[in-house]
Amino acid sequence: METGQKKSSVWLWAIVLIVIVAVVVTGLSRNKASNETIKIGGAYILSGSQALVGDLQKQASLIAIEEINAAGGINGRKLELVMEDSAYDSKKSLDAYNALKLAGINYIVADGSPVVAAIRPVAVKDGKVMLVPGATTPAYFDGSNLSCRIALTAKSFGPGYAQLLAKKNYTKVVTFLPDNEYGRGIYTEFSKAFEAQGGKILVSEFYNAAGNGDYRTNITKLKTVQNEAQAMVVVQVANTVEPMLKQISELGWKKPLVSDYYTIQNPALKNISLAEGIDYIDYEYTSDVASNDSSRAKSFKEKYVAKYTAKPVYLAASHYEMVTLLAEAIGKVGDDPQKVADYISNLKGYKGITGTLSFNNDCEVERPAVFRTVKDGKYVDLQ
Image 1 (cartoon, rainbow, N blue to C red):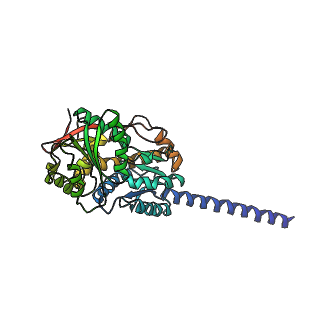
Image 2: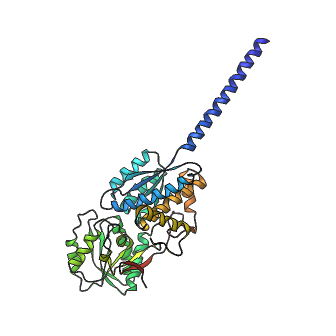
Image 3: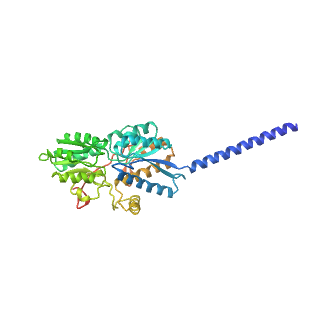
C-alpha cells in the first residue's frame, strides 16, 4: 500500500513539473514574441539615376518609424526598417525583393514603376503585402488587395494631360517620355484620352531612362514639327532633369512645355528657373505648411524640415503615409498579412497627411489631380 502511494506521489510531482515547464516555456515564448521587432522591407532606390528619390523614401519612412517606436511601438513591439536597393531597375528590384523575402519580411514598401511592376507578381504569389506610395504603372492593377497603392496612376495622369491641354486649347503636341514602365504607361493612357477629344500627337520620342543625360538627338527629332506643334508633353524623373530642360531650351524649342509633379519637384531640379512657366499635373498635397493641414500633417512637415533642412515633397510624405498606415493596420488586426490587406482595402475616407484616402477591393485609391504652374519660382494653382 505504501509502495502504491509513493508511486502516485512520484507521478503527481512529475505532472506538476511538466505543467511548470510548459508554463515557463510558454511564457518565455510569448515574451520573445513580444520583444521581436515587426520588420518592414523597403525596396528603395538607393543607387542609380534616381538615388535622390531613394533619399526621400528612406528619410520619411525613418521619421514614421521613430515616431511609432517612441510611442511604444505596435502593441508593445518595435518597428524595424530593412532596406534593399532596387536601383530603379527591374532585375535588381527582384534581387532586392528576394533578399527581403529571405529575411522573413511580410510587408514591403516599394516605388518606381519598373520596380513595382517587377516585384508585384511574386510578392502577391508569396502572400506578402506590397505598399506603393507613388508609382503609376498600369501593371499594378491586379485584383488582389495584397498590392496596395495610394498614388495617382497612369489612368489618372493620361486623361489629366488631355484635360490640361484642352484647358489651354492645345490640340497638336509632341511627347518626350522615358522608355520604361512609367513612360509607356503614361503614353498609352494619354494617347487614348487625347485622341478621343480630337487631339493629335505629331511625334513621340522615348528616351533611354538610364542614359547619360544627352537628349539632343531626341530633341532634334521633335523640333522637326515645332511649327505645327502647340506644346511638348515632357517627363523626366531621373537626376538628369536639369540637362534635359537646358538642352530643350538651347536647341531652340520655343513652344510651351507640359509636365508632371515627378519632373517639376524632382529633387535633382535645383534650379527651379529652368521650369519657369511649365504647367504640370500635381497632387493636392503641398510641401509647405497649409492652413487646412491636420495636426499630423503639420507635425510631419515641421519634423522633416528640422531634420533634413528641406521641405517634404509628396514622394517623401507618401512614404511616411504608407508606413504609418501599415502600422495602424497591424495594430488593429495583428501581424497577419492578409488581415492587414483586408483592413487597408476596406478603409474609406481615411484622413491621411497627403489627402483623404478611400480604397477599393483592389486596394487602389482614386484621388484627384490638380493643375499647377511654375510662376516666379513658386508652385501656383493654375487658374
